[in-house]
Amino acid sequence: MPHPSFLARWLAVDPDSAGLVLDGLPYTHGELRALGERVGGWLSALGVGPGDKVCVQLENGRDLVAAHLGCMAIGAVRVPLNAHYRAAEVGPIVEDAAPRLVIARDPSIYAGVPVVTTVEEGAPLGTWPTPPGDVTCWLFTSGTTGRAKGTPQTFAMWERNLDALARRWELSPEDRLWLCLPLFHTHGLVLGLHGTLLRGASAVVTARFDPVLPPAGTTHFYGVPTYYRRWLDTMHAHPDAFRALRLLVSGSDGLPAELSDAVYAATGHRVLERYGMTETVIIASNPFHGERRAGTVGTPLDGVDVRIVEGEVQLRGPSVFGGYEPRPDPGAFTADGYFRTGDAGELDESGYLRIIGRKKDLVIVGGVNVSPAEVEVHLAKVAGVAEVGCCGLPDLDLNEIVACAVVADGTVPLDALRAALELAAKELSGLKRPRRWAFVAALPRNAMGKLQRARLPGEAFA
Ligand code: AMP
Image 1: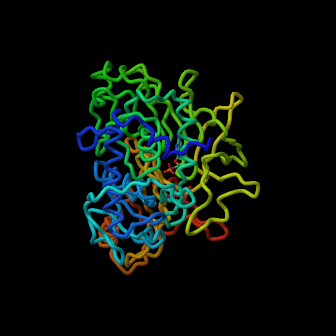
Image 2 (image 1 turned 120 degrees about the horizontal axis):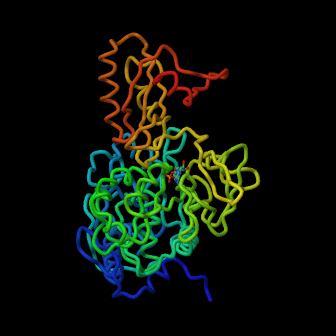
Image 3 (image 1 turned 30 degrees about the vertical axis):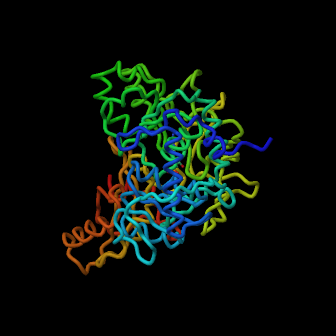
């Protein structure tokens, strides 16, 4: 018997079973497949073939899902882009991905590539081939370098991870997810969208999270800590609507224990926290039945081997990607093949993993990764700037915000410089824009002259 592949399993799901609610309209799994085949026909007529990359920069909704399904139907590789990205952010990604086609609402931010602004349908074409090398997606993730890094994603890594998660969380076709996480990120795309397809389950997809009641009939929810914090008032006002859910999951950033306790007090649900990354999918999760320990991310999933070396979480496992493309990072893996997460953690005696910090320079704003180096490179171009250093500062709503310390070169008055910096920051998507600024005489550097971002909060923003 051949190993069941992700696509074969989804194509075998009962065509009449409930699939996704998109833009308020329900689609069965059969209707989703037919939609994918018509969009696949349109893409093929535009010259897209198996293995070709298609950048998809759209908000959650019917068009975004249709674009993904259309690519899947013809074996094209999807490259999802954050819907809020501006020209400065999409440029390097397009250069690295070299897509055959871009599907985006605003063609003006792209140069040198064909862009279409709507998703259309053509004569059905759906052979649903496994794409070359099984690579179905490239996700670009804000790394610690200034440039987003391409991570090829295979159906095999997703399938193994989603099966391990389904066992851990007791997911079944009866489940109906409220899927409001952005579908351009691993959390919403892999766990939310592809998890729902693989299980033959259903999901209500909405454009964004609003702190309202969960849609009628939904059984579970995936969110980031900021969503839970914003949801507390509604939870207090309507505890029964939340008690009706089977499972609340949090990830992408640490869920503070006080917030976990506050949700518990309001709803009786202990939010199940899990830990993962674009490069590895989900690594560890708290249990469904056993003890969900606030402040920990639970135990490693089946087949995942986690170790702590000099305080850093390192791991091997079936869902770990093969390496960055097209710019490999020789330091991403250890010599003995463990992926270096750059997160600081500890394992307790019962095997629960606690994430205690980040060894890498990364700021996570409302669950979205921001590379301080990328913001620095962008702002250093402003006339009047000698040097800039960015860091994260704690924030009650977003968990962290970006803060920027600037050394002026004395050629521009400080108030004009501040205005020019804010204007330049608007060329970046909103969560990357610094919310605190400081003018300083010098940036903290080590003996080698390397910027020490970890000292900035204490020295520039105390
Ligand atoms: P991303 O690739 O965007 O999913 O971001 C991955 C990073 O998010 C990880 O390396 C961690 O720094 C952080 N992260 C994800 N889940 C958690 C969690 N449960 N607790 C703390 N940090 C997390």
